[in-house]
Image 1 (cartoon, one colour):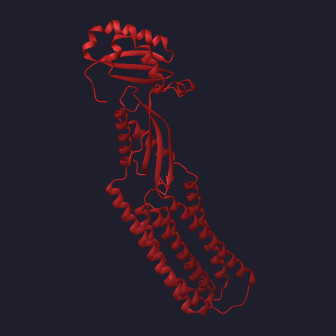
Image 2 (tube, helix red, strand yellow):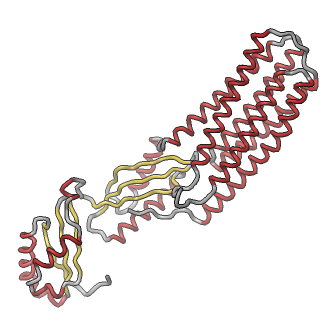
Image 3 (spheres, helix red, strand yellow):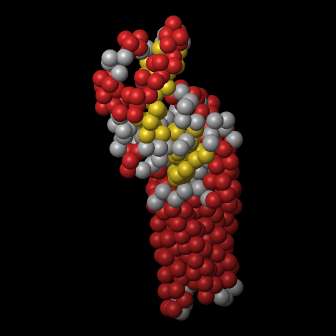
Length: 393
């Protein structure tokens, strides 16, 4: 089984660049949300606007979201370690769940507040023009913040940053509702305030459920979609030396990256080094041609090997070699054996013995003697004699 290291220097530089962009987008969001939340709440109280106060609370919730996102982005960039061999990308997934939870809580609070005001039918003073102006300012700032953050999220392929971008969009929509509510109240329709809060609450809940469901799917190791798995299969099949494969499994992490493992069948007589080279070629091809694959574990299997109880019961080299050496110890060629290679095929073992080229003239007689040895040991199906110069061990 091989697990090549696939992260190049260029990939590491790109990851650092993405981290800087994500951190910068989150800090910019926090710097906008902090004063904006305070202004909306204060002006909402002074300007007699419940919708603007609710909008300010929404912006304050964005601050909590920004703090969670910033912490998760920093933790997610940490390199893999002994306790986290697959890296820390799941930190972003967990943080996305928290952001979704904050969205749902905020949505519930806005909807509840709207329903309460709608049911109360209280006579209140109309909002002021200052409240209307602040709601308009909030709309412009939050919509601009949404597009900026969304662009960073898609460039860095970060589900967490994209969820935070939509949180900014929900705040912009909340500001639209506040604008309509304030304008309607100023024109004598106070019920619009409550209806706007309820509508924004529902929209916010939809966004929270959407990203919460996506992060939940990642946390339970949901694999890539069928069409992407088919692409992975096709890429593996194009690698020379691959006969077929089994147990291709994938799991997503961090919103975009995926880890995979697969069993690949190759010619049972290829060398270990050639089999390893095939696994490296598989890894290289997948990383180049399948954008989601961050790493893959390739398990090389000999084609024709039976995955059965009988195959698993075959003796290992340390068990069978002493029995073989004892059986052929009296043969003249025993002293000249240079190498013994075992091939485990189905539920039997094939043995290859390398002898000096000088003994090739005795081949027929010695092959017959070793055939007799093979017949006496149940686990051995065949002993083949090869002749050549000594090789490195």
